[in-house]
Structures are given as C-alpha cells and as structure tokens.
Image (cartoon, rainbow, N blue to C red; front, side, top):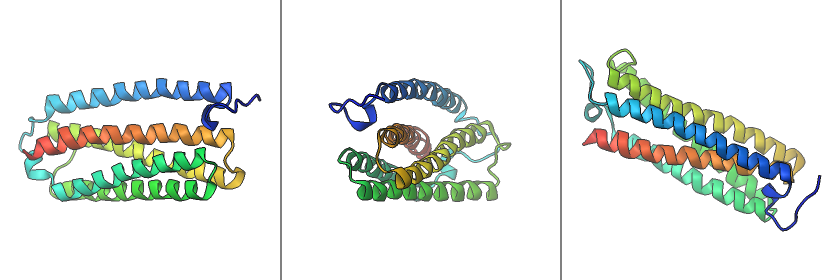
Length: 198
C-alpha cells in the first residue's frame, strides 16, 4: 500500500480516496431519500383530520435542546477530525466521545417527544400529517442511531490500532455522515418545527 505523505491521512492512499468519493455518492442517495420524505411531509402537513396540528403538538423547548445538542456535536466531530490530522489520539477520542454522547442525548429527547405524542393520542394512524411527520423524524432518528453505533465501532478501532490511514479514513467518512445529519436537522428544525409553530 503506497502512502502519499502530501495528502491528509484520510486521503493518503488511492483506496482511501476512492472510499471518500464513493461515500459522497452514497450521500447523494441519502439526499434523494430525505428530499422525498420532505416532499411527502410538505404535501400532507395541513392534512390533520381530527388530530392535532403542528402548532398544537410541538414544544419549542425540547426542539431547541435537540438542535443545540446535534449542532454542538457537529462542532466536536470537526474538532475530532482536526485532532486526528494532528495525530493526537487522546483529544480525538475525547471529541469523538463527546460527539456520540450528544447524539445519544438528542435521541433521548426525541424518543421522549415521540412517547409524549403517542400518549396525547397523536400516532401514525391519527392523520396524514402525523404519519408523514413520524416517518420523517423517525428516519432521521434511525440515521442518528446508526451513526452512534458506527462511531462507537470506530472509537474501538482507534483505541486498538491508533490513528492509521484506515482508521483516519473511517473517521473522516463518519464525520461526513454526521455533518450531513446535522444539515438535515437544520431543515427539519426550520421547515417542520418553526413553520409548524407559526
């Protein structure tokens, strides 16, 4: 395996560069998925039937905490990648750990939010609006859950093998995924929650 010292570690081999390129293609498919879910939601957002509307259902406090946790986790993920490029294993692990803890906090609030909705009688079957809302939020939450497990697996590999071209490549690709989820959340926060509260 030929390593190019002039490139960042995550791009230092041809295989690594190809993996990053392939992941960008994967993110294109993810953009198509979430675009479809947003299109369905925007088509059905006022089809509330006998169920509650967004303004009756959403609570800004919880959503602000979710947003704070996820956006801050994006910042710590960036710091982890910066530490990786400086070959600082301990700071990288700390920032990676903080990223995953904040992702877990986000999931905890979202699950609590879903439980509250269901207790209030707002379920998938209540209305088209709620069906599209649960599918959109649930798909994003599932992606965050998968990201948490993926990130935890990468942390174990870094602990065992250190910062190598392989672990650096995996960490960088994970950071692209995590930042993508944050961008999707910004759209959810702006066009689902804020719009729904108006």
